[in-house]
Image (cartoon, rainbow, N blue to C red; front, side, top):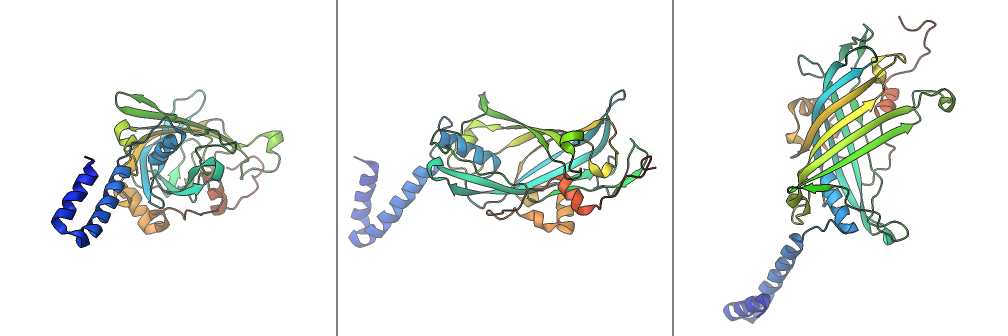
Length: 315
């Protein structure tokens, strides 16, 4: 006999017709919900791959805040001299996802977020206000990363022609999953003039991410978000507030982190900074946020007034 029908018969016998109708309805709803909740995510399908990516980067639940935190260090690299460790960093990103109906493209989602990364004194571990630049010998003011927003484009399981466009890009090994993302960046630098096509000066950087976790956790349909660890490397030009005046060389950031349990899961240095200086970072942007994305360069332009370089350079 079907187990549901068997339980229904027992309920009717014990409670009687009047009570059992209500009880049975509630029971069936609960049973159906439980069955849906434990359904395994199939990574081989476009919908399953999309769901897994959403679990990695945010949550399957709309408007649920998710926090990432990372720690690491920033180094300089110049020809003919050893690399230097300039400062430590501690960063966070708070995000949420919302469901978007793409019609022929299927049910997709959009991620919205904002992020902070603090440049920390190598000795005290506290956020820097002023910094003695060892590459120039000058003291400069420090402008921490405060990018709001950092939003993604909508992602769907199918393209506009109805063909699968979302596939699982990770790999599995001994019960674990790994996924690498390399993001080359090359675009107009807002701190440069209108002739970058002719004389250069475009913004160029590379972001390299390695995400990892346990495969059972990722495909578990009863969990709305995955436990994720992340490694991050960033190659870029000098930060504008370093006042390097076009000197040869570059920066690289090497950091690692993970998804944490809410605001209280962040390192103390971040919680203190956000609470006292920028509490908006306790929550993500609105799901329908339509603002342009912020970068360290666009944020710097808002905070610092430009000026003409004097003849012979800055002394």
